[in-house]
Length: 329
Length: 245
Image (cartoon, rainbow over all chains, first blue to last red; front, side, top):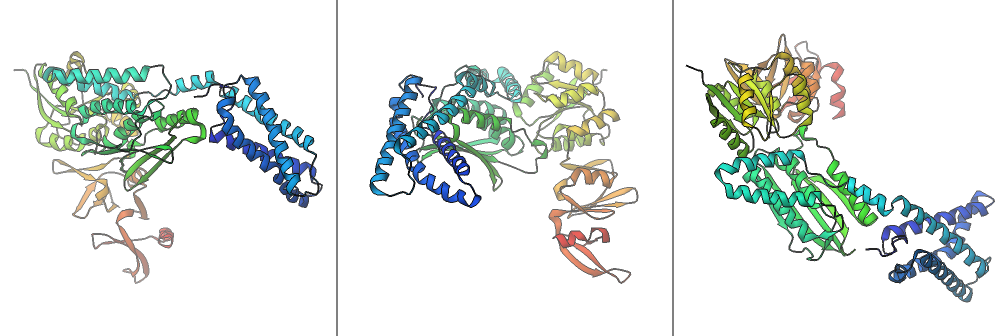
């Protein structure tokens, strides 16, 4: 994870996207200010872009490469280092341009450097404000509020199922209570750091064993996890609530039950988790709240920003949730 | 001799039914006469076993407890209804407000005993109070020669108002129910189209439209239906439906 939490994470795609947007927006504003007539705007913007884009791209690349070093510095040291780097990048680009191209009205290099410093300051200030808004304390509080909650429906029905076993099958009742204890230990834990995917999956097995107790043969589950990376890390309780949803909306409303499918694989250095369950549009009274989904979406965003996604889809009478998160964090 | 109370248990989870049976076996003077895994099965079994008390779980597949309780009102003799639920805040609030009997799972022996002893049939007001909990029924119940028939709503081809009754047409036959077409349209509006002032036809069963001559020798649009030879005349006011398809 990040070492210097106050400097933006320059290994994050979302941060670079924002840098790109802010700088180009500033260039556009500059073009508007400089153009006397509207038809001058576009040529001016193109001219500015020709100078801005090389500096911008070089900066993004350079900062990405140097981020491991930068992240070890104190915040003010980091800022100074970034400023120095920016001046160096700008000078480099301008020396290069002056050598190989002839521009009509190229600004002097020191003026360009000054502008770069101003723009860099604006971008850094933006990230500073954003960091404050999403400060660890606030993000922590939000994560806490978003902590996955188990449905009371599941809790009480499970207790009821265990009670039914005590007289006839005390051994099974014991195992069930142990599974329940493990499940609730995780649910109530304060730990919101990433956990190994394998751990989350074993938790899901315990959860599904409990559901099997109630639903018996109606609940069928297929795991396609052979291609799963053994060392992947995910936010805790991402998978379990989705399975709970699948059971509640996909299995319980069906008299004959159905099959839940879980597929986990990596593609292009991203971890994909796909969960699908049978879905009958007829079940009008099952129009559940989207709480669990919204909750997971927000937690993914707090952990990975724009590098993760959660999509849902219904096709062939099946409801599918597809999660994509970066493999290495 | 004290009378034996006959009890029907309806729950989709076998362990929950087992637990209920265990508890009832500890109570004197009761007899479990049937166990059902959904509302429809409960109504079917209740016709032959004639229970005094029906213990209905709220959340069940195919037909839930709330709907089963409404259909149970047509049974003779009318059974007492006790709902059971693990958690359903919305329903519990309605039960409390309308003095409807219910038990929270996991159920305690003493509570079950009291509930069974004081259980009573649903009052008309309580039945009204149940309606908002169950937005759309899965079945229509038809009272016919002392029996209650359950017709799945997806088998209904059309509903036609005739004098006091509504004709319910399925591929096999016709049934009569005492309800209002307006209420049926409000409840099942997504499934049916109003083709005529007195007729709702299931969208899934409309095969197409055709212009035909009626008795007065006027050309008129009619809807052709899948599975049955009958057609339904479309009133002038609804002819835009033909153009929209």
